Length: 143
Image (tube, rainbow, N blue to C red; front, side):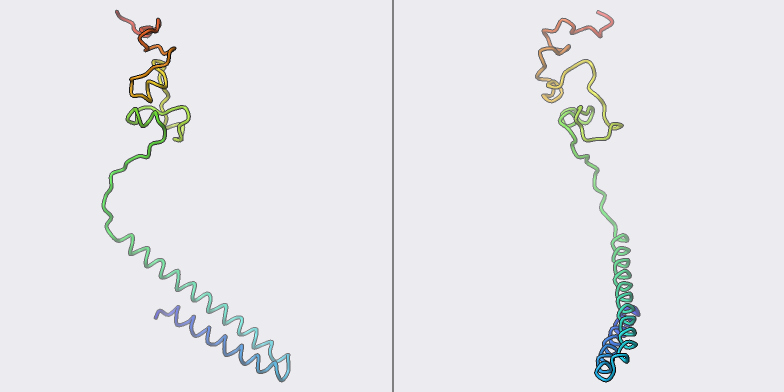
């Protein structure tokens, strides 16, 4: 039993005894009960504070014990945030990505959304890299 718990028990017992004494005094004269009720309230408050201190001490001890235990290292695997990120192996983020703007990379001018989400197997009709597009090699500088 810690000192805080002993103090809480003693204050609780004193509060109960003072409450009983105040009840007995109230039978003789009501004004005699007021000092006993006041003292009982003070001891009840002291008991509550000591019990709270005991709980805080126990929580700190448990936290220190948990922090002192060695933890196994786990590899950091990021959670997928959008379909673009998932299908591009984390290289590109989509326009409706949930990541912060600083962590996103926008899709380049070279291709379309279906190409990214289908891993390069589908294209939009207006895509520049689509085989039927007239602007297919627009960005190329040499033949």
